[in-house]
Amino acid sequence: MRVVIAGGGSVGTAIAIDLIDRHHDVVVLEHVTETAEKLKSLLPGVHVMTADACEYANLSAADLRSADVVIAATGDDEDNLVVSWLSKQEFGVPRVIARINNSRNEWLFNETWGVDVSVSTPALITSLVDEAVEVGSIINLMDLAGGKMCLIEVTLAASAPAVVHGLTLDELRLPDTTRVVAVVRNDQPMVPLPTMRFIEHDHVILIAREDSKQECSSAFIS
Image 1 (tube, rainbow, N blue to C red):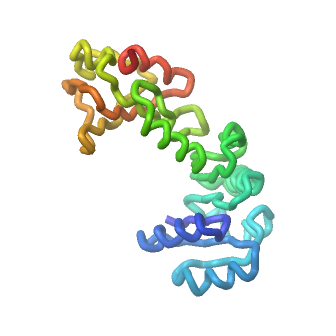
Image 2 (spheres, rainbow, N blue to C red):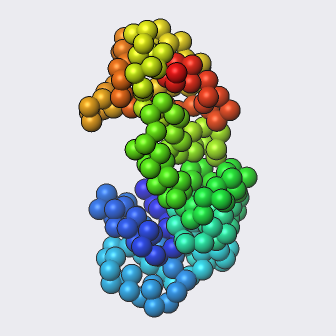
Image 3 (tube, rainbow, N blue to C red):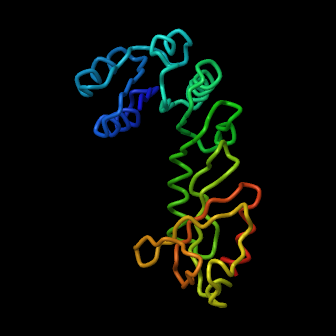
């Protein structure tokens, strides 16, 4: 795939290295001349452009219309929103991924601004902290589909209805807007088969529609 990354900081550089190792065609746009020059020697195989990714002309010069994915990875949320909007609205990029630096801005990163997937490092770290201390609570891991869907996790307590009643996944009768996609038990990932029964300390990973994620509480939270 052809991937264009806006931002040549530590995040953008790390992504570029991983993508090159996976044999993708990678372009990095970095507006600071000194940084861009360093990246050219640091990232062999990556096309590094000294350019402000918030400007239409620079995105056009990067041939954004041929990009499969654009990653807005700068350290500025406003810039990432501008890059996302231009990528989707002006260049029709199929998939736009945006970095969120300030979790208070998370509500902005949706399809209105051209964002297909947003990644919030602060929110993710908070979720991991919650995961370490919260049993029997819904933890939001990631927003998907422009905020319409979400990836959530529930760590089951001994009092969870699914555990107490020994119900199988099929017997839980979860709503159509919710799907169990994985279960982690004793540090081992498990495929959620219809006949699976749940036990205390299971980490249940679900995809749910944003407006219905609380519906799973009747099965997994006491």
